Length: 105
Ligand code: FES
Image 1 (cartoon, helix red, strand yellow):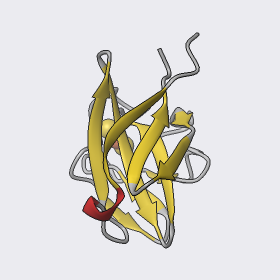
Image 2 (spheres, rainbow, N blue to C red):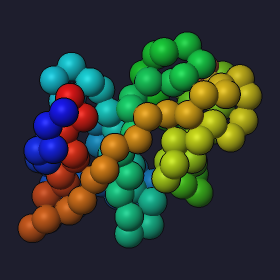
Image 3 (spheres, rainbow, N blue to C red):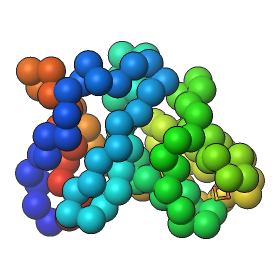
């Protein structure tokens, strides 16, 4: 596994409780802002495998737009049914105003 970091955009592009989608070698992910922190999660609900893009984000939880499962954006943990498996999470950092995600591929 590579440990390279991938630049996916400007940190200023994400407002609080907002998100930015990215694709790293075919893996769709979302970077979500929760207060001053950014978190990276796979853009795929563990209930049906479809994208979470467009989901509402409240209190550091992302809410699946289809059946309403809540996930913790910090840990990926599934907090409410009908999802039970956690979202995959990725390391993210900001350098010189750019969002860098650890290459998961
Ligand atoms: S698809 Fe996400 S909760 Fe059902």
